[in-house]
Structures are given as structure tokens and as C-alpha cells.
Image 1 (cartoon, rainbow, N blue to C red):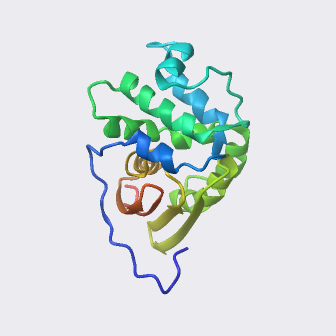
Image 2: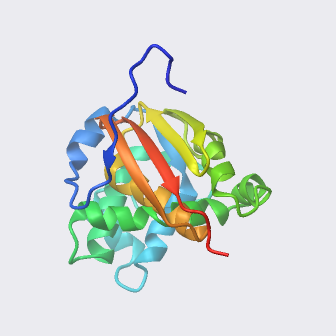
Image 3: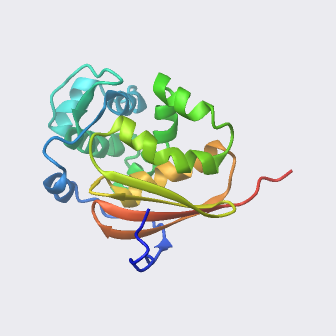
Length: 210
């Protein structure tokens, strides 16, 4: 949670057409940053009818591996792979918009794992509870970054991260949107971006129609 002495961030609506600077991200990713293999494997599945894993890995400039769901792999490789899969999956979109669409699968990728099901299924169809447990989920699948979440009001939460360069304006906006869609909620995402690895997300949504 943000310290009380820090002025509240200035949120702006999430925007389309975000520029993605892969090299800039790679320069600030911690040397030993890692992520669970389930997210690598899911990217390959997205475009399996268009390219083989070997072809995609070659294009991304990463080793071709067999990815095991809960084994750690270099996070920089995931960023490279995400950019290449975005180009293959959505060639007519800007890279930022394509990555945003990929991000919408994040919740389902986590939910497809045994640990994810244990963590998330017990929360029921409650978007607020899921957003508030998101920092815990991040700490399970990542070995770097700092995360927080807080309830602001009814159907209104904030989620933030620090030291986590990870296409925050594209992939993570999409991840929030995908979660809201899963629960059948119409909502809005605003973001206050400090740098490539630090941001706060202001998330609001409407009550479901009866």
C-alpha cells in the first residue's frame, strides 16, 4: 500500500496504441528475474497454428526449451517471447494493443494451474476479492517486484507494483480487463505510471445487471 505521506498518484485512462520499448525493459529487468513456465507455454499455445515453438523461440532470440508450469525461467525471455507472439497473433495491430490482448489471458493462465485454482476458486465470482489477492498471486509466480492492493470503495480497488518492468501500460491493463470480463463486469482501468517498472492501477466496475 502507498505510504500516507506520498501524494496520491494522478490517474489517466488506459490508452490504446502504447509504444512498447523492449530494449528499454530488458535493460532494467533484474538479472535473476524469473517467472513460472506456465506463462511461456501459454504464449506458444496462442499461435500454435501459425508457428512452431522452435520458430518463435528463434525469432525471439531465446533458447528453445520445454517449459514446465511451476519451474522458473528468465523473465527477460518472457518479454522477448511476448513481443514476438503479439506480432504473430495480431499482425494488424500495434505491438502495444496486441500485447494488451495477450494480457487478457493472464487470469485464465493462472486459473489453469493447480495452485491458481486453489488460490482463486475459493474466492467465488467476486472480482474485488481476486484483485485484492493479486499481490499474493504475483509473489507465487514471480521472484521479483513488489505488489500491493487496496479497497477504495464499492466496486473500486487499486493495485500497484514497483521494480517490475513488465509492459505495464499494455499487458497488465489487459490482464485487469480480462479478469473483469471473466466475472461479467463492465469496468474502467486508469493508470498512474511512474516508470517502466512502477505503476498504480485504479479499477472500477459496474454492478451486474439483475
